[in-house]
Image (cartoon, rainbow, N blue to C red; front, side):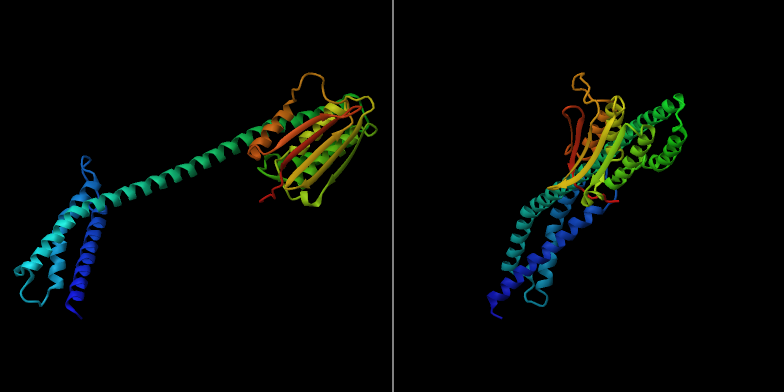
Length: 324
């Protein structure tokens, strides 16, 4: 090998050896000693240790790469000059390289902590939303049960012969419905089962004044739906639309999927919207808030009056398959 190539090879070998030794020093003092005085920062220890290790690393590099050469490198002016130059270069550059590495490390740690904080905050927000949904669901449960039991009481007070059969149907319905009140998620198929059971109970109470139909696309049945959503609209239609109407009326439930959205409508031919402002009842206010929480604001509840009388209520929310 020509002399100049050998010199370059030795030079790069010394640089690599010195760099490796300084890297090992940096890593060693990153974990040792385990505890430091509160007034002394670990990064300062690492910078000082690397600067202190530079001459020893250069000395070891020159000693290993000149074994067997005569004269010894510390007796050779050129090699001794190279040792001094490499030592000075190491002392000038190594601490700054360490500082740059520490800054990069600190920045990476800050980014990891920020990501962990964001994940923790997202988890807390999700838990808060879940708690809010459970609270709203707990509020709707007694509202629904008390309204339904009030209907049975009216039959008993009127000594209706249908009171016993309606009560039996209500008991069977509640056995199926109450456990679902506490479920965090439901499907439209389950919601339609509850709606059908509820309307059958109400039809037995007023067989000549209530008719109903249900229709749903097959694609809509497995979609996610907050519990008691459709039932709240149907109950509202029966209690505030059909029941007060002298001739009763009809309730029609339709569920369809269109362009990635689920459109669920409840249409009644009852007395229509109350003429008192634009305020909603407790159940509908609760429903609107539950929809906003469940779908992150990407849901709408629309109400409009029908001619000559009646109400058209429509839910519009993303068509998402229930994960459960």
